[in-house]
Length: 250
Length: 250
DNA sequence: ACAAAAGTGTTTGCAATACACCCATGG
DNA sequence: CCATGGGTGTATTGCAAACACTTTTGT
Image (cartoon, rainbow over all chains, first blue to last red; front, side, top):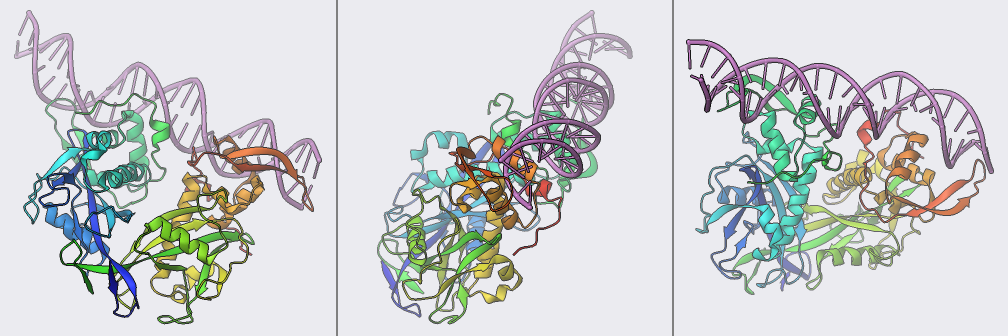
């Protein structure tokens, strides 16, 4: 352990990293972006993308930088609609065999993104259904199974009380697109008519574009943009809507 | 900035601290524990209690240790009913003039605690109404006004969806005691009758002791213990209950 | 070419429930 | 005076059915 003597006196210092749980919905399934590690420790194992926080950047900036390095996302906060928020910090001694590393985990939600580019250090990156990972937590390096579990739970809760579900949809999107996001993330089937009533009634959630999308088969769907509201009032609760059997993924 | 060379290569390391927003309800008002700083920087200013994370302890342990050092609380997680949870991390460069310090903020909720003991480094500690602090954020050292604001918001949300409000009440407590907690934290008045229905109907929130408390005036109140449930189903939403005028504190 | 069927999105109707607000009663 | 319980009108929800719009299939 190092000791910092700048102006703090004698204080043990630690490496600080950010790790990202980047989610999207593909094939009606919640998926997370994983990278295959190209060096020890956990060489060849899969892990959440991440990296060390630099000396002159704040935590959010480090997260955005890593996000951009791992994907084609320009940057969070712009018009891409991508959602980025801090999840929590994980700092058990021994969570990284190289030494004391405290990591700040971030949660990112985005629409069905282009196939991710290889990271700067040429690691292969790909989407994986979270359901498989939750069933086999030992697949992931470090304590990333714990982080992933917390991230999934956070995402599910966010859908209940906020309008971030729209971040999973490329605009413009239909009410059915949005409903399939909820069904994929929660893993349950929802009643289409009640879902429509709730999301259209909620102030500032959806903004009609007036356009329509003609599908391969079936009635055209009205299209919407994400509204300006961040909070979903009233909320869409899992507990009260989980009356129907779970939807089969894939 | 330091550089760690143990096994991580050349990585800038930082000091890691924990800061605590310890809340209680006194005099029907939400109050937070502050300490008066005994050394530079911000000498003489007030701040949230906290300290550096040690080399061999995890983040939660550091928070519990600081909590114990600042108050008489034995430790969180035991039968004291005290609630402790991670709030988030704050790591802007420059948030601490001594150097790069990333702090992990914790939220603690407890019953009307005994007057806090002086900290180990003889700093004076005392309860302060959060309302005053939110109105004068420059009072607090570092970025603690930001942390406090986030902590208050988290506490308010926690009361909606979980049963942690009981952590503010010394057992046994009455339904009115619990209602006054909600009113103090949310800053609004609640309908006693509806409140009773909701909290008594919620599975596992309250556990009747069979005892009564005879007040100086008025009908005796039935007494309860906290039940085993952590989640409050259905939730008690602020937005739908905030129809009545705010309650005057103090 | 026309009609029927099938698939998806959208709207409507109703019973059950939950809720806010108000009043009554009890210690 | 305060805790507790009940009642009522309104809003929301779960459930189900019908309706609208389009493509595909059958003859």
